[in-house]
Image (cartoon, rainbow, N blue to C red; front, side, top):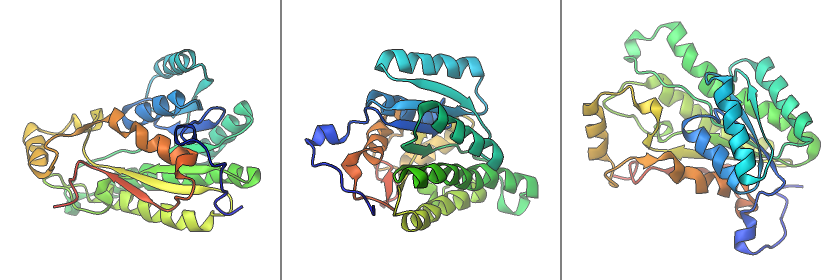
Amino acid sequence: MVLAKPENKHVLKAFDLTGKVAAVTGGARGIGLEVSQALAEAGANIAIIYNSSTPETVINLATTLASTNKIRALAYRADVSDQASITSTIQQIAADFSRLDIIVVNSGIVSNVPAEDYTPDQWHAIMKVNLDGAFWTAQAAAQIFKSQGHGNVIFTASVSAGLVNVPQRQAAYNASKAGVVQLAKCLAVEWVDFCRVNCISPGFIETEILDIHPQEWREKWFSMIPAQRMADAYELKGAYVFCASDASSYMTGANLVIDGGYTLP
């Protein structure tokens, strides 16, 4: 059914994910870790998809999420840039949990290279994860959602999809995230009969992905953010639960920008 209408619930119950199954790529670190925790706190069973973290770390995380929130949580290693790898992993998740309701397409990498100096390998490394990997992940989940007749895709994009960050030079990253936002819009229309598709575009978030940057860059960013600070990753938790839940039942093709006003001036 096109944008299936949920039961008219008490507003707080509309955010309840009890019994749902959610998979999160890049779900063991940074924003993905907070998303995994948020969906678990809302009652969803969680499949944490990771690549670069150690298996022990992610297994321990899954065990903690399960015991703390009285849910099921399992860890799965996959390379999102490899279609076969992520497809087989998502199929395994659906088999292990007997369903899949939500996929959070969150894996991403960044590099800072002057545009005139990119090598083919540097350019393709970003695109393979951020754009190709995003599509392979969503595609694999959509095959399950189409069979079930329902599902929910949430992409982690970026404010970099719509502006040029300074002083860093990251044309590949920005282009990849712009592609993700447009991809989500296309899929929202194409897949409207069996799933919703939305984006969340964070601004500057205090995660390890920013640790490599010099202090003077951070000072420049602070001067451009009306909020005069970055966000902690946990401040995104509510947005992901909103997108994952019946609270956003009529929203598809949207791009939620959460950036402390960074894109406004």
